[in-house]
Image 1 (cartoon, rainbow, N blue to C red):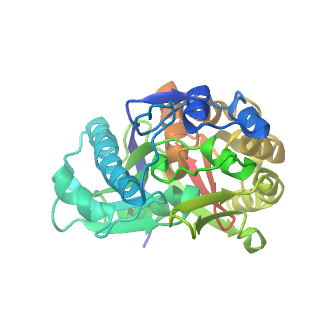
Image 2: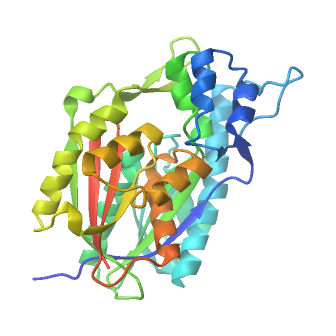
Amino acid sequence: MSRSPARVHAVGTAVPETSWTQTEIMEGLGLTHPIVRRLLRTNHIEKRHLILPERDPSGLFRKESVLELREKFARGAHEVGGEAMRTCMEHAGVAATEVGYLATTTSTGFTMPGLSAQFVPALGMRADTQRLDVVGMGCNAGMNALGTAARWAQLHPGRWAMVVCCEINSAIYSEGDDSETAIVNSLFGDGVAAVLLNTEVGTSTPQLLDFASCIFPEEATSMRFDQDAHDGRFRFRLSRAIPYVLGVKGRQPIIDFLERHGLKRSQIRHWILHTGGGAVIDAMKMGLNLTEHDVRHTRSVLREYGNLSSGSFLFSYRRLVDEQSPSEGDFGVMIAMGPGAQIELGLLQW
């Protein structure tokens, strides 16, 4: 029995009110290492929205305890996440009680019950809403959750499925003046993206035709969380080689994915990439022979918000739709990358 594919009907995004320039963050963290300061002065990122503590008398951000960081994640997830979800539902004209499936993703905090069980009563959803919490998959988790939501929507024609990518990266910032820590501290921002799916045809509602995954196990340690033995805090480790790994190894899985659908790279009108960082965008652009126009929204989201982890590609998608550039019949590819190392892909058609 053939089933209609799920379609993207609306995306809502939200960030904390307070934004910081890279210079303000550098000064607030008291970073002095020359390499670190150079990283924070690159023009790939101009500002980021972050929930940061007040400054102490010396002008540095006050050090937060592990408990304070957990509380910040919970508070930020509810405030920023709730705003993104309400915005998404308003765009689609959907009431919270109409959502039948809710999938949440995060790699920046852990709660039990998970975010999905908390969002259901907080947003006024039905108690029988089916739920999924995706925790620990990193920056590609949003694509994984989108795939599960799309399949649920296919099995339940006409019903609404929602994915919420909730990342409060300021709840896991690292301390230190070394280059590896600086890469992390110079890159991530706080933000939430929510997306609503349904099989019904609407205006500018692209079909989600297929998804694909590819993991490179030999790069498993290139992006990872470690727990510090001294203070118990989780620290994200990101290899400086990862952009080149993704640029070189990521091309063939994408070409194979397109060939599976009888498509060539040149037939893809819209490219929606994860905002992994300036070097990651450059590497993927070179590997896929993309133009600067192809990555314009990825660049602008990175510049204004930093890397928003699992919801990054949805921020870029929202800008593409707001631009009203897709036309009927256009194909688009969504690309997310994360720990593993792995690449997650989605194929769209308007």
